[in-house]
Image 1 (tube, rainbow, N blue to C red):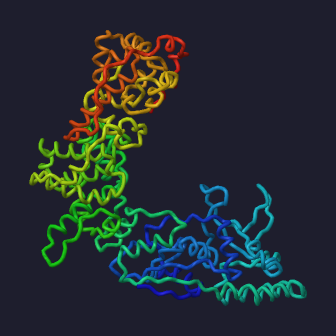
Image 2: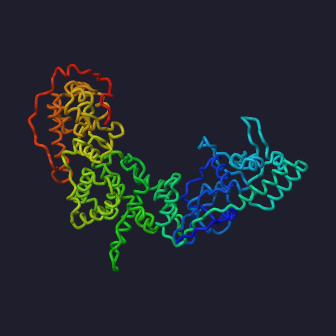
Image 3: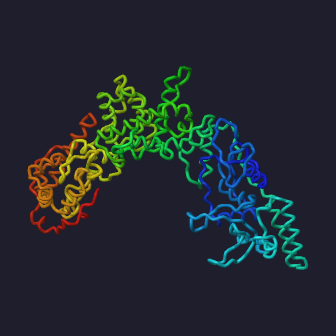
Length: 631
């Protein structure tokens, strides 16, 4: 599968120059700084190891699109792709081989670009070999070394000026004739100066041979290596670089196809031509509201959906001996995805994601951060892509709803997501087509006790409860409007405390313990939350009535739309409120998941309200909305 051999640096750089050694197009751009280059040259000049290179023989089944090493001319047929070692080979090619100044950047400004030629200070390289890195000089493109804003400390623009300061141009080190001509001319220039001649001779005998004879170990992968093996090996050796996702690798694979596809353009678009991601979020036809719930759909999500369709198709077509291949959307499956399969399924998957977006809108999930598990979109999109119009029937939508809420509220996709996607997708298809309910679905449910501990908006179940309240039609306290696409942009509803944090902490007991539970939170507008402030409900409810210019009866209806008992809230009975709303939420959840919630608490009679004196003594500042920050 691979072989390891040391190779002359001279030959590696020549192959890079001729185009025999190139980079796969998925590699990131060159990013090393001037100091990085000097450090690398210093290591080479001392004969220190600088790490192995990893190459892939060209001409195999894995045809990554290639690109030349920066600055290289090319012209020869590609022989090897450099999978690991781009920064080192690009630096060494630019400094030691290329006749043009190489592009790099200052150490302290990654955004700035500079161009440099590199020289070795002969005297320092010979007399202070332990610090030979300090002998490497990077000079500007005009062959000068600045000293401050306007002054020039050294000028290297002609051979005589280089001879004068004993600065050897490193980009001729692998050209024997040019190098020896420079050395002879320098010796002539310093004729009669025994010290300078002595330094030059030692440089030729002690320093230059270390560079010209330097070898780098090369791990060469056979062209028969599989995609999975190549990508895995690349990631193992590329631990110091940016991790490449499956989309970048598949992009390179598709670009190297006989009938290539630019996957980046296909996804992102180009110029005025929108890509798939734009059409998913904004729809095929321009105008209207974008579906912000789909704004987080990633290119890898799209590939996963295509992979699910492709691997299901392969599994269904299996008729030979042995077990049929598995349905999969794991990384390995994505890297094995044929371009033909992508072209076959991409349009249907794109429409599938738009259908998934319409499903979210119907569930009143209008924002990407409110989706319990983004991976659920991959399953829904795949089901719609596989079934087409059959997935739009009332029966099919009800089954998708039941699955969606059970997975979200049971927090089932918190681990092994890809494996569960590969299982749920075909199960949903069979359930819709043949009415065969997935056995796994019966294992998913909700425990009422979880409501007490749902405090973080990062939790899938937390998001799901919030979404169910919005779907139920809860209306804002002040505007009286429910959440929908028409009001989302002008008056978004976010989740806030019903009994304010300040009040609960002063009251203590169960109120302080359960203050951040989802039971004590509900989706309202920022204006409504400002009306609440940090006051007791008995104090803030009249303010809401005044602010909204409504009657108490209307406010009671608004509170009821949030499954809040108005009387318990108005009398500041936290524990009774909490118990009653918890029971109401359990009924709401049970209806959504199609089965009873377990361990539902028994209803107790409301206790007496909290001590009026305690409430009267609490400091209130209703003008300060920070009393009850968004949860």
